[in-house]
Image (cartoon, rainbow, N blue to C red; front, side, top):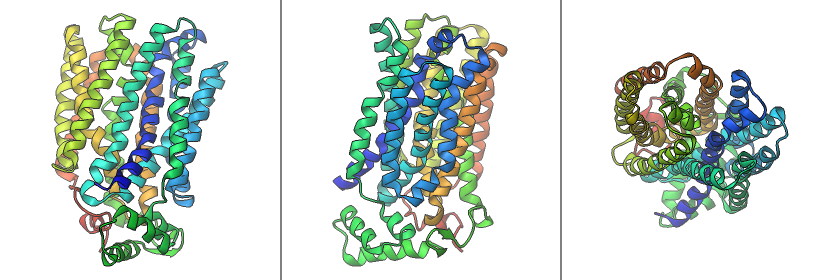
Length: 446
């Protein structure tokens, strides 16, 4: 593998580390915040979901800076948003101040899910695109693991205002990521297809593919140019919402929709509370949450190893089966009060997610749209993911109060049955195909 491609992919994928850390670090602080400001269920849900509403907005508008200013510059400013959010969250003086700080971090998360996978997919060779783009997901789960471990350690060592330190410590990796983004080159496909700077695009392609002949480089440039249907620099000749893009739009929407209707974010954010429902003490629940992070990391490795070997569709089918078995068993465990197997069910659920949806979602969305619509398509998939994540986080505290756990897990299980049916009947395979050839594969190019 080209070392430059790996280094640049790794750097941009670190936005995923901050994504994972930022969204899950709240799990260790949520009960302290509720007690500190005497929040009711709705206020608590609003406070916790503030970052997710920022993520919804970030994902919705993220395609604009990604196209207008470039993938590299967008990634750099994402780091700044994370840095400001971390420091402000740790110093928040009330619920409104806290929500504003978390909202800013959410903007960074939302835009990162547009810019980072898109950038990596555009610099990666087809045969390694799944693994390299999947590094974004790997860093998400690595960030989740570090957040769980950080919460446990700070909760054990800091007696007063531990939650503030849990949130503020994110400023260190945010600063490192921002500094590393300065060495990234612009995406060659952005330079050629959006910026119309053919010479600069060729220069980056030559760095990405040092062994390629000038003829091969020129052929790639010609394919990129041919794939773009534009009347002016940034105005597509055909609108995004068109019959031609029905297949990639439906893929982006449904893979993101089912990702959240598995219950993954609700379980990650409220894992200590779920373990306490199963009769475990607070510290034991926090420690079990670290187990979730470790399981997520290990099986993400498995997913990334397999994604370019057996394909995206097969991984989603395997993940769907794992979801159904683990969620169904968890529902039964709560119904029968067999609480001892709840942690095992949760770990199995996390493993199924890491191998399937977790490894596939950002890869699949980043590769199914044509060049001139890729940022908008990534924004659509990201927005769908985060709007449902925000809604679930907003209502989950009330849902837990009003419904038995077996009903909640049973609902998530049913949704994963529907996901499996969708994958089996409608989802095509995309592994090993260049981004330009993908248009023909999905019936976009006539």
